Length: 219
Image (cartoon, rainbow, N blue to C red; front, side, top):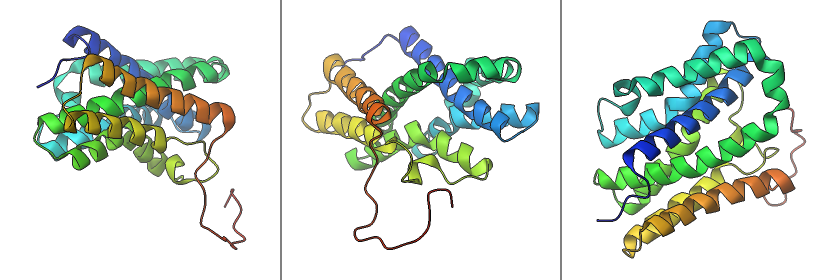
């Protein structure tokens, strides 16, 4: 139907890098919440694997990759150990973590869309599952940590929007039979760059028109 952007080995490596970075963000939130080591590991695993796990269950790719590839399960545990012992240093590397997180967002929204389409879903549903693959783990992380999910908060830089753009680009390329290694890579890079720009310039989605609420961002 279309060419693969990466060889299976390279794709697997990129998946593990994305999983590791997402796991770091989950583990750091657990430390800020004063969770114990088990709580840190749970948040790391959920953040790293939650989106892909949900996608695989929806499309019927069972057992999900998270349970058939030991590397997917072990990688968040390495992130847990790193954050458990070195979290002050990891916090200081937050800029680097954000860059890799943006790269993971771009990769996962594209890979999720392609995989959902390969399993027979329509273009709109495939794009929605691409978005879910990219942001689902973060939503589960915030819910377990008793926080309003970041992608629902107006005071957070755009996160879901870059993933939506990347997933939509892939869906359109599939629709017009233009999905090639180049266009797939372009979708990844577009989502990645949009997320970095949102972080750099603090782009945020608009709130309700003529909003009169007195609720502050901390409430």
